[in-house]
Image (cartoon, rainbow, N blue to C red; front, side, top):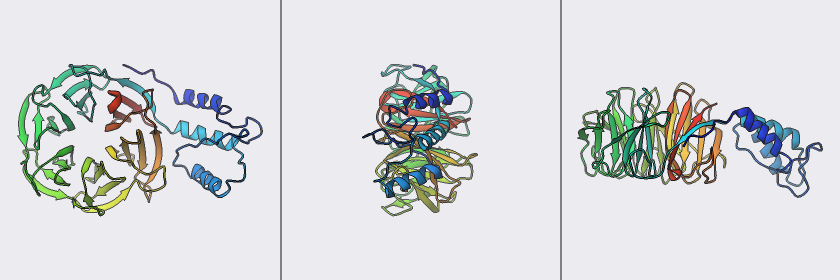
Length: 356
């Protein structure tokens, strides 16, 4: 299924037409009688200030037509466009059943893990290959290494490694409890040195492994304080080697230095910035933006990593839905060349966003 692209200008013009229906007086600058004023999720100082003023003066009708129009235009211009959407529900080759993870090789190929294994598509959605048939009953975390091989977590405590043609090359990692071992690996990423980082929800830490599976060290430890994990679920690494870790049972994203020292956390700021069960993260190192999926809130958020404190730039979604730009339990994310690929899990599809 391929979605029809829609321009930001078209979205803005649609919003203009909807203003009267939303209760905004066209000429008076006031809400229509008895109408609630619509809100926008935005990281701008103007909209934040307007929201604060409304909270402080709830008894005073606000002049909304001009202010809301400006905020709406700004928000519409600053949101991604859905430029493609593809996926057919099912368990046969070329179909998807609850897609979890996404990984690209930078050569026009996108790997999708789901409850039936791993499939390779073109970034345009053309099915190419089923990987691990009979070997991967469930696949979750996936990453393409600097060696061009595909690293997969899922049904076992080890990491399966496949070549681009889908042949199993080796299994790495030692199953067991404690440091240096893997119990329930959930996600994977490579650092700039080419080492493999594995989020282990069972042992509650991030294991750093060589590509042949040798244990190199740990990031984080079990616990509920900053720098500790109850169940790390997703991770990504930026160009400087900083590690971003989200947990399925927590409401923030933790950041660590390249050598594993805790740096900071974000996602527990204002109500709009709060993360609800982080399911995926992808970092644009060049622009300093972290993209985060929220499976429970059915939303994708973008955070500006260059601000102190780290702040929300935009949010897309927020209610379960199957239309263009809506999500139902989104999980894995993959960023490449100004586009964000989203595993829209319960809709059994991948949505492709052209980023602002």
